[in-house]
Image (tube, rainbow, N blue to C red; front, side):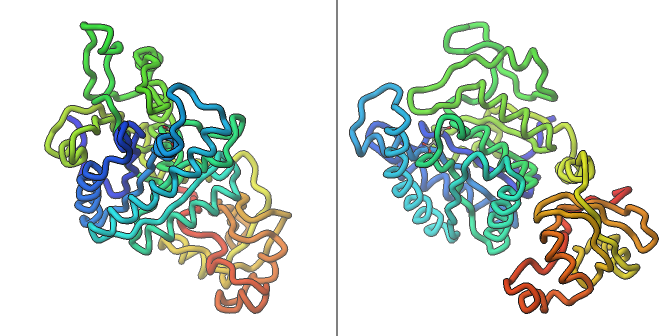
Length: 371
Ligand code: GLU
């Protein structure tokens, strides 16, 4: 049995360039229909995030660059031009459907370096909390060959795992996975459900891709590996027709990739499974109780700080008797943590001279033993 679109709570939708941009430029009507689909999902108290390609494709049209592969500096320049139009189109479209868009441009290190990862994550979380829809793309204007994703399929998968999304939708110019490239092989069989990405499944992904999009089935399977390993379900669906998400909900053909674990546990597993902790915070009885009840760790509940760590490092959370009750990503470096230990969150700005987080370790960034 395939899952149902409306059973997911936090959904990342990735849109390929070839859906948004054609020879004439941006496909406004298509985008507007997609905006209606997104608004319908978001209205059901779901968190929606969009990873939108199209900056380079749009920019190269404006610059009238020749067909074929671009040099790096040309694609950077094209993205600089196209991203403005892309962001504007998203902003206007979502506004028409009653939602606010927020633009996020990421580089590879924003998701691979933990401190930057934490920072990007917190900005995106804040957008979601404020009811906005993040519109995300790679920051192509500064990304170089060595330090870039290069395809938004994997970027979208990383974003989905970063935010603990339970579903990643890749809207593409193909309706899903076939046992062989369908364009060249008439015996190609369609696969509606992939329970696990095995070497056999990987072998089915040819290297096909249309002229405008960089990611073929290969990068989609790579994305699937990132997503499903962290507990995110993935869906590949055809996006060319209007209302692609509504069509999926109504039963259009698509391929589902089932997750290997549940989303929360995957994220928590990542934290609790950290190879080494950089230090520890000892908390009082009241804090132990609060943590077990699902609360964040506030500085007020911290009795002691041990080790030298930086913001974003994994630390142990020790109970009053010194036993490890869990681990978490700490929001302050050890020097600042010591200064605010035992103090009220409202005092942080006065003590440190800057307005830091109210929590020493946020609930979302914490894994308690036995959870
Ligand atoms: N970031 C690129 C763009 O916006 C697209 C990458 C891709 O097609 O996957 O043009």
